Length: 212
Image (cartoon, rainbow, N blue to C red; front, side, top):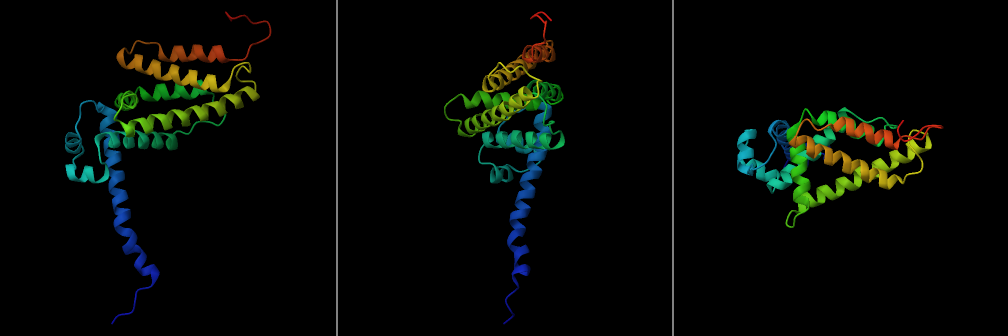
């Protein structure tokens, strides 16, 4: 009888299928990001998505149990890849971050539509994946912006007579609202409106007036 294999010899056979599965799942996500960035996801069934991606319906449902779960994971992965490729400066203000995101989103309207679809679904009953996604994302983004507001206030870049939590919530509302308007009408002054918000949050200068 042959000797038992050493642990190191056995490990690759144990991890192989799992690693291959993760790689396949990542490949599907990367393909889906590209497809959804171009055309969005509205009215697309899981079977149609599989055809568009060039994979079988069975392969898609093996990694994603529902259309909604796939959409959530696609957006999360797209957001992760973007954060990795274009990290925000530590001292960037909340409005600067949202302005950069707005400019970037102009090139991927399909992902903007996907995000809006998920947020809308999160407000309805029967969409646990979308609800978890939107709730977690708003909380995470708001927490990050609160910290940035506090840092900007400490360095004098942002007025110190406003509550960081309120500012973070306002910036998110302005960003998402302007984004929705822009999706419906590209003439909406999205960047200009965010610039105005930045000026309203700037620290008061001695001798200045509200019209400065």
